[in-house]
Image (tube, rainbow, N blue to C red; front, side, top):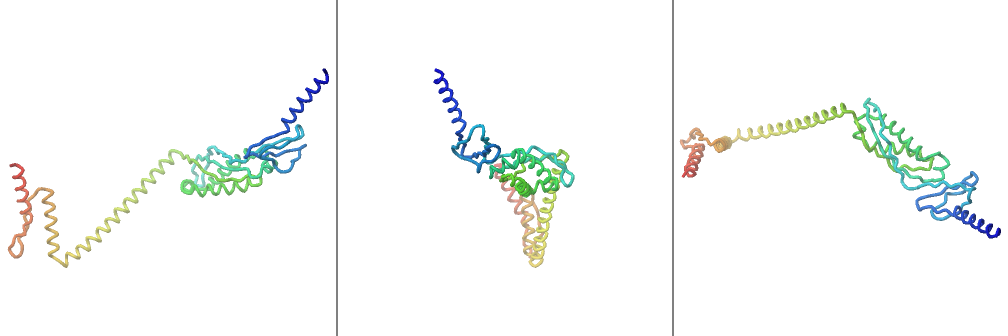
Length: 264
């Protein structure tokens, strides 16, 4: 009876040991094994591997792209404008061994250095550069973070400044500046149009001075347009040959005939 109990106990212990010895990690994971405090070769995985319970300690590292959300930072720019800026950093563990043994917590360390880098980069820029050169600032932050995190076995894929919040006073100043810029462009367009019109009028005047008949024809055409718009009878001077050039009279008569027809 005692032997059976002992065998049963040993069987249970054996099952527990086997369960703890066999480890399975996913495709995107790697396992760094410490045996009696020392790193046991290269990281294991993916798949199944065996460890010695109690003696071996395992640290599992996720090698998927990690997203670090940098909270809003109150920063003073080089031209003394206070802005609230937040960003996001995308990074990946390339060397699980370095990520475990060279930094205590690579996620916390990467987040803190990202916040510091964001403040440093924004603080060295003018406010206008933050709005107009955001891609350049993102690249600069990526280069700095990559240099710092590379010894930790981490690769920074990209950095993106998401939002730049400014005080209400500065927003009103920017709106006024934009309105002034639009007014400036509008005045430039109008002046260019007036200049072109003046050039065209100068050319027309030169052409009419060489051809009086064309000038007279243009005058009659103008009077005709005025008569049609205002419903007027315009009497012009007699031609030099005694023939009537009273185009306005003809137009007026035509208007009267049209009115009588409509009344009938």
